[in-house]
Length: 467
Image (cartoon, rainbow, N blue to C red):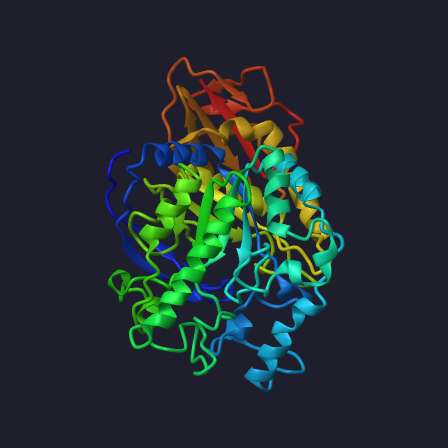
């Protein structure tokens, strides 16, 4: 891999979904990995294109935003609701009492893995711990964890382990989402000082021993995940305000508010993690440098092709976490999103949020089944492909595999494929052979216009093979 030029990307990285309007355009210098095993894993990851993310924790019981209602900032996504919302202290106590009743008895990761596989997903990133500090794995560093709930007596109570095992059994690459900040840890939000915002409640430089304890705690939890949970492909680190002061980009609005150095020694963490998991991809989101092996625009798609490894993490509905009445995106929109991202050189990481009982909304299964139906016919032009100019033009998107090009016509909702279709954006060779994905008979082509068979079934995106 060669070192790539800086690129421009609009992104609200490390902000909750409700704050996407605060996104900024900023330059990041991508640093390709030097380790051949990491290069190999990165290439494998770039080929699989489509993954599943899951945000799940005790917050699902209240059907609220993940973790952020604990944060004492005057922002819309931090709003508290419910009987204890008048007092932050009472609210925090009630929130941290949720594990006493958390019992997701319908938890069945094998069902999730099969549904995701049938949809064409090939990797999973699971929230082992969000900013609230509640561990969805059996950590030995804290009692604030899934195995210390009524669900703890269940043989599948070590949820993260069960999730990773179920998806690995279906051939998935596995990734652990892990929040660097921890609002439950007394070494991050020290109880001596009330927190003012998302940052530590004390100045790490003034209390170096306390910060050192937090660094050890973080290191130990990550080492647990890297040693007791099977083969791991991705360490996906969130909470980008926990970073060395030297990496703060003051041209990005949310980074301007980081008040002090929060260096947790990523070099040490990455070295340890890769000693247990050779070739591990480390994704230290927004912290540009050697520990951000790919970049992660959130809830949006770059306007243009990006010549670096990247992934859009997006919600299937409107929320990252479970809400009782979710507003799911249409299958049409989701397929368009996948094709648009792949044509621009990225991967789609699509989030589905389990509920307090451990089950997905039925609509989530329906969307996956419908996406899978499209993938079964068109996946040849998605997996293992590389972007090819002009990438996206008008209603057309393009990919390539070897000497074969693929053209995807992105139809409007309800649009029937016309009997004659003009290919725009590319010049066809005189002897070009074009077939529709899923069909064997070549189409008649004249001056770049394809004659489409009558009665072609309506699809969100129509795929064509150009040889």
